[in-house]
Length: 173
Image 1: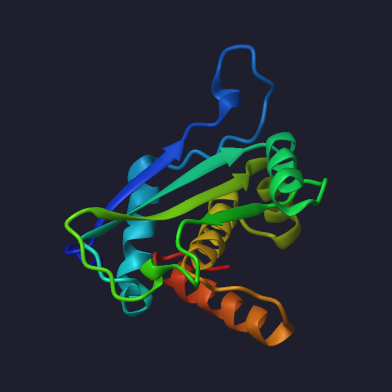
Image 2: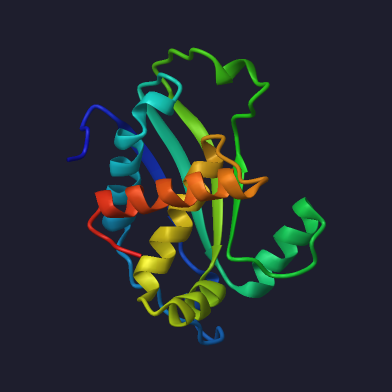
């Protein structure tokens, strides 16, 4: 059940390829309300890990391999496409990482997902594009909240948490 006390401002930026004359890419076909429902459910489930605030704000950018490759090269010095990137607004050493009380929404950061890569991964993993996009969005959210996977143990914990988040919204990987 969604915790209605959590206010969420979510911006899902429409893919640029939906413009006239753009190349053809897989259509994620996920309504804004679905994205909002997923993130609200996930934030409610993880409330204990969140800085206290009236609500939270984040953005999701659905991109293609070319755009995410540029982001990956610019921010991570890896000149190749990837499936998801997360740009956390809160850093562990930030004064906001501690107790935070505000009447404003707390900005968590940005998530960029390559729909092209997600489509290939969905086929390889034997599930639909919606499940893969939710999986990647959950992964990105965990990064925004300070989760990381520098070793196998932390990766296993993070993947298990992603499964928990997907299950909470009725999806299975």
